[in-house]
Amino acid sequence: MTRHPRTPSPFLSRRTMLGTALATGALAAVPAVATAAASPLAAAADYPGPGVVTGDVRLHDPSFVKRPDGGYLVAHTAHGVGLKTSTDRTAFRNAGTVFPNGAPWTTPYTGGDRNLWAPHLSHANGRYYLYYSASSFGSNRSAIFLATSTSGESGTWSDEGLVIESFTSNDYNAIDPHLQVDAQGRWWMAFGSFWSGIKMVRIDPATGKRYDGALYSLAGRGGGAIEAPTLFHRDGWYYLFVSFDVCCNGADSTYRVMVGRSRDIMGPYHDRAGTAMTSGGGTEVLAGHGGVHGPGHQDVFADSDSDILAYHYYADDGTALLGINLLGWDSSGWPYVH
Image 1 (cartoon, rainbow, N blue to C red):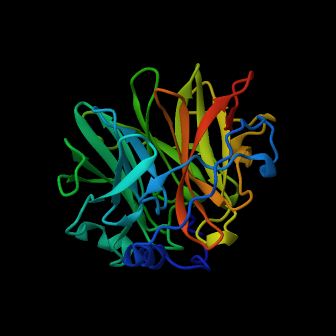
Image 2 (cartoon, rainbow, N blue to C red):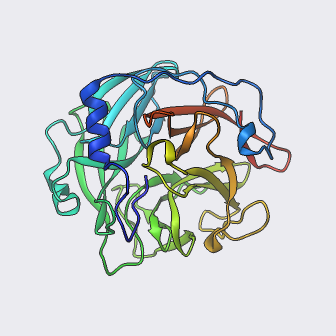
């Protein structure tokens, strides 16, 4: 979700939006689904609607992990980091929060706001790993922390401490983490929002913390709106999905999902036209269309039936909802939603 480096969101804060959703407990109607496959070069108006999801589907910034039993665990922005579960990737239910008693160690970054942003879930070595962000709108005094759990259930998570932080003197923002294991088994964490763009650090798999002091630049728009990196490895390519433009303005949001790719996880990443992502490049994968406004803060993962693109979007009334589409690949290896 957008944290502009110079001014806070002109819409409601995360805390206000999510607090309202939790207080009302109401669910907005989910738009009807278009099932026809989109052309890889489809205009925004030709994008299919999100697939059918039911139950507790109000959220921002979803991150999915497939559980050993075949179900799904979803983490999302909320007070104490929200959790949802599903057995079939269609019906979702509330599963509490990672930190039901709060996370006071994040206060220096949040100013006391209990909202923790943009988590990323993964499962390895018999444990769930959760990287999550602590910050406030308009500030890059931010931090990414790690928590782990053997079950993934609410209240079972142990905070493992700080992974990386950013200061007002830095030209990057330490939020929106995404963990990716490369083809050699090395662990990496991409992150970033606005400022100089998307960064990446290597992670020590023994600790889940930063491996060394190296900082890699993956993408940027000269200080413009880019955030929410997602790395995905397929057929010898590393794909970098990001969100361009503005989140958190309800139905006026302009978020859209973009992508580039590289043979090396460290880059350089280029879009379909050959423009470097460090120079503002990106090929559009999904944008607003019909009653789907500002789709973004995506997660991409491989499932048994298809690769999956999950994201949040806004309905016409400004409600933030979970969106899920199948992700296809054209003959040149570029992704498209269907």
